[in-house]
Image (cartoon, rainbow, N blue to C red):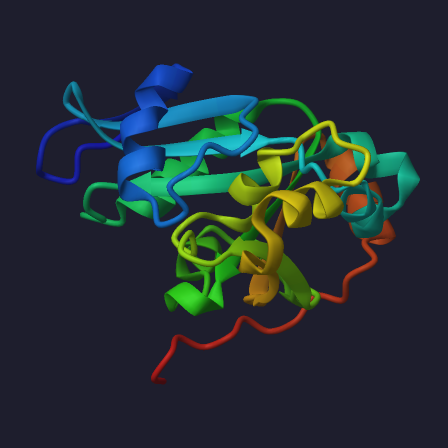
Length: 215
């Protein structure tokens, strides 16, 4: 799939176990998302990066992109993590993993402003920019701020009222914190007829790419 003068680069499917050192130890979220597909970037035979896709847990998000008729096609590019970003490795991994997804898909991904991300890799991969995500709040516990809000929420998965269960356990140490807004990107892949229909149904107005921070 390319060499770039520094050893052969390939992208291929990998296991959940392969992703763990990257997603738990290297990625800033330090947690596993819901993963349906995972692919790795190899320099020769050394795994240098991973990318994962999964079904978004938010039903309103799936419906809100192109309507109910397309909600089953929505997948989220929920993690992209590399040891180093050499020779445009990130865009190489994104482009080749999208080819391996197969089928008709509407891929959504987010660039976290709080981490200084503007979505350069998605711009290089010709994603559609659809503005900023809505303002939301995350669950937090004093002394455990390093944990992702969803990690906190997962502790009481299955409870009818998770917020109340959290408050019962942690008391005033449990609080809500504004979630950083994110840049939102889309990529429609698959057969031409599907791409045309999904684009026509798109509920987000495509916008010019945001500029890199500091420019």
